[in-house]
Image (cartoon, rainbow, N blue to C red; front, side, top):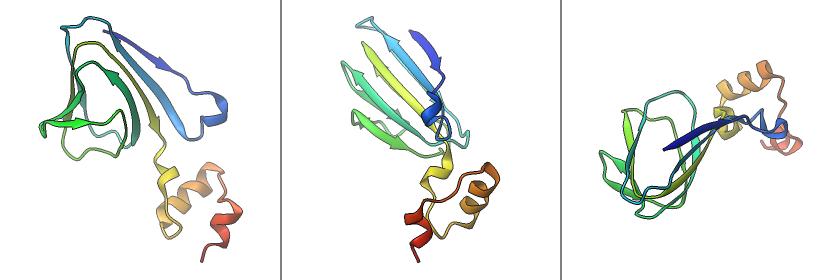
Length: 121
């Protein structure tokens, strides 16, 4: 399996910590990617010949899905050829207007809510 970490473009670097890319060209190769809680939600875009399963739930996942921080360790299981791209997203982009912790993070990071956010009451 080939793996690389891609530094996000400056235009998205406030929102994306890093981009992980996994690639496998062997048709009979089984790949297991373990996941542990790291505080970062992510987005997975994947193309596989036999699908991507989340274990221990044994759930077949769609081509594109968003995931949150895991409570218990999980594994992504893929058999065959694959291309998986995972941007690790900075958590505060999912904040709601009433989330005071997110407001503190925005303040500390220098981010300011948009006008639409400020006007929402």
